[in-house]
Picture 1 (cartoon, rainbow, N blue to C red):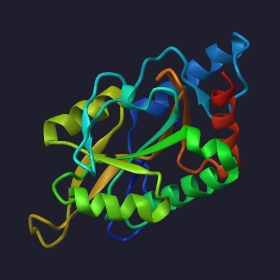
Picture 2 (spheres, helix red, strand yellow):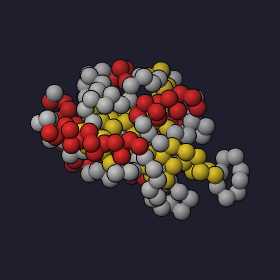
Picture 3 (tube, helix red, strand yellow):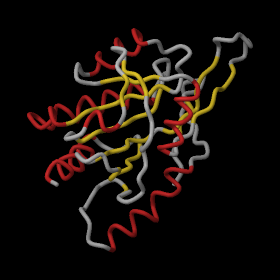
Length: 209
């Protein structure tokens, strides 16, 4: 099961290689065999994904996963100039928050940019909060971004444009939702086309635990 997405120049989806979703299915089968929660997404309990990273939010505050202890955290990697998958996924997360009602205040959505060269703090703030005022976007240096992506086993790569200009490029990147429980443990990996109902279902299960 491989699911990084190319936000390509022709605004078409293109599947490329991904290690994270390729590994998700064995984890899911193991968890189901142990009588774990009936998640709609792949159960990644025990994988310890998403540990040991530090990025900065659009307000200039350093953040780690522990910054959101006590909340269910949903992480999505993308970039603001993504023409299709990212805005669609962010809009779906906004729909999820609506479906959660009062429980949405116990959830933190994090958008991690894979394009820190162009995604400034100001741009990220305008982008993320346009979908929901509670959303946060994070960025880092090139090294910090690589470290964060490695922690999630997320893939990203620059795809040069036809002009050859330095700022003419798109980004291939893993498009998936990572769900963490209130203790900061990775629990669910959902494909980018998972429904808002399915995501809300899994978040509600995590809020009960």
